[in-house]
Length: 120
Image 1 (cartoon, rainbow, N blue to C red):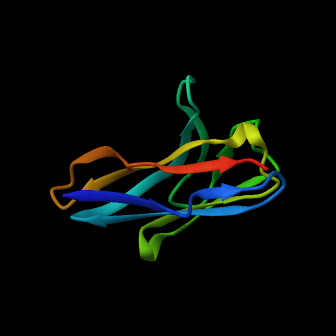
Image 2 (cartoon, rainbow, N blue to C red):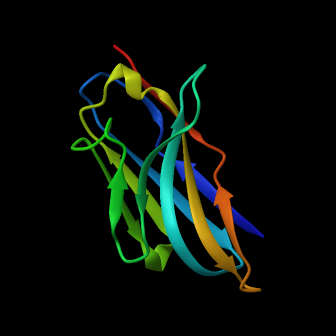
């Protein structure tokens, strides 16, 4: 069994910052790409940022310069540092990981989501 558990969401004022964390646990052999997506009410889920095992990153245009994705391979954890938050960043944020389990089977896994609300 593999689990991804997010933490760090909450309520923040416009212009503020939050740091999300997502820890993967279970029968993991190796984690490849990791990322964050978000889904606002009434909207489709959108990809926010991704990071490869080697540390290469990609960002959605809407968050470039404000969000930073990073990871700690030793802890099987991915982070999303969110600065200069705007009301339009309000959404449920989901982490995902492409990984091989103890049987060397490769699949995508998703966390349960954490709510981020940007409001005054």
